[in-house]
Image (cartoon, rainbow, N blue to C red; front, side, top):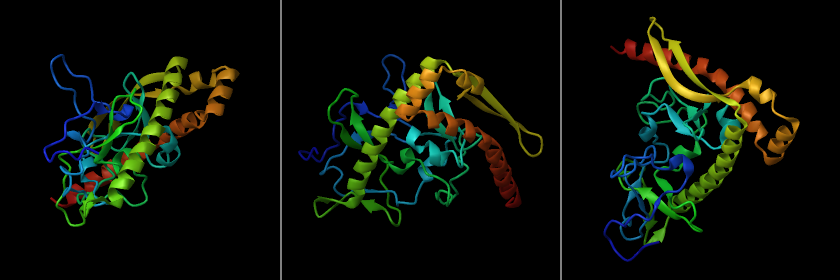
Length: 273
């Protein structure tokens, strides 16, 4: 860690995880930070010596999003509750958590994630993130500089000049997510090369008749998947990718559950008026 100064540490590269990579920006403009992050900086023992971060169960930062990046090893758990979709040309695997752009149906007004519903690693690791270039042999732990918390239960990064378990666990979770996402990227590249996905859009009718366009995403076309050569199926099974397709296709049945959640939330809001 950089312990030479108490000033804000200089950034060293960008967010390293593909799902968290800053979005492209027009020439001359700084790239946009990853989802949920405002100003990720390398961790500094001096600069962050007294910093505390969100209480463990506070997910209020994720309340205003409808899709969250996901790694393939998480598909088995996420498919129980959420539609798993792919976004953009790179087919970034994500889980849908709402039908409206800024409405996570699984986070309540107090910032708690609904008990019994899977919380993705991308969310659990926040505000930590690995920083550096993809080619770097060793990445550096970073933290969002705007994620400081004074809430009851806020967790310290350092105590008596030593790293706390919070910091060590944050590093471990970031490393696990980074490894899982590199595996996911290889899988998605193979799926893209196989040309078995198609763009889709979803329009739902809310209670009262309001029509809501959920937006565009990409999903596997089951007919194309079934037509893959046996050699490809065997290769994907050997590499551990095949189950990802099955969980993805199964998860698409969860759109109806999101519609029901939306209706329940609308009814609850109307009852308070």
